[in-house]
Image 1 (tube, rainbow, N blue to C red):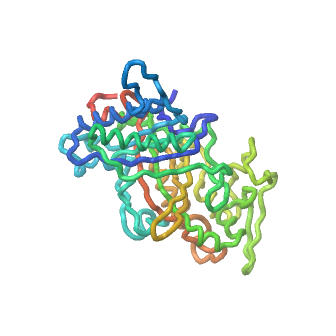
Image 2 (cartoon, helix red, strand yellow):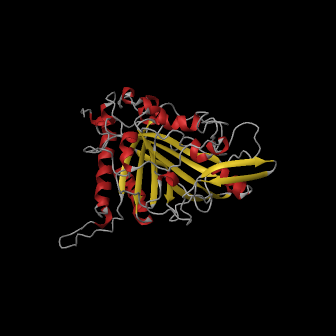
Image 3 (cartoon, helix red, strand yellow):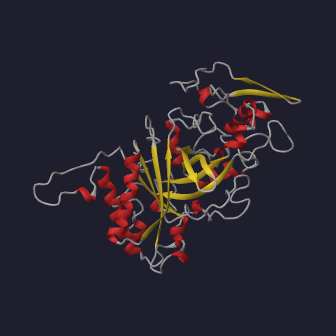
Length: 408
């Protein structure tokens, strides 16, 4: 039996519900380890009550009052710890040991132009710090009320109990019923099958006992430049993605003759426009193409090796993304993806983004170098990002041994 926290929907027949909130928090600089432990005990306890429909302001206040409970919305709660929580420069002297920091969390994602990755850069005028925080709570539920209530109840408890925490930012996300992204292609089709996922996500090393049996989360809030994308022809878009835009059928080959593009698709592909039940594996997870142009498409670059999920070089990750739609003052509509993945090695994500054989040479997909068709496009930019350690589900809350001094 695994000990992965709820909120990672990797088990057979599990599917994440449709609404997401990610809440990023920091402890105040003078907070001691004991005070942090007490704050997390209170927050975690309140959230467990909320999962049972218990809202603090609606508890019975006198004898004879009903035991009223709100609909839970099937709320799940996940708690993670960022690199910052192990930074002694950001906290009091009486704090957790920097030696408890998992190596996988790495260094802070640097600010600046052409950062933090080779071909995926920060957008303009973004705060690169807010999601590289001490803590993250992930809330997922079947409706917006349940996830919004969780955010509000966290803030209310911080205010009521004068907890030494502050919310940096929260992000919202939702699933599209058509299982497409804002560029209107199917998304998340070739995720791992259920039986492979635990090998890819579970951290089994014993170097940090508080993390053994847990996992690591990567988060990128990725904005998509729809104006630039929609200037491309449909066939240019399809070759960059590697699928037919309408049906989702994987491409088998593509030809460029002068200004003309042509394509062929794999045989035996469902042609409905919706992802069918029991779709063939060649549709969900197409084999590597012999065609160099197709091999450079997004679906092949981002999933270059489809071998054993327990082998490091295959960089297997379990994705659990949510779309977003925001309004930005002075800019207008902002759309994109809350990219969330779980893996036993953060390095797998860094390699996918940074390795030239994977995504490292391009922003989204397509060939490198002087090839003009389809044209190179800077489709994606980072609004926010962070890496988090997700310890196993243990009492009194995940990761408690960091603060209470008790061994696992």
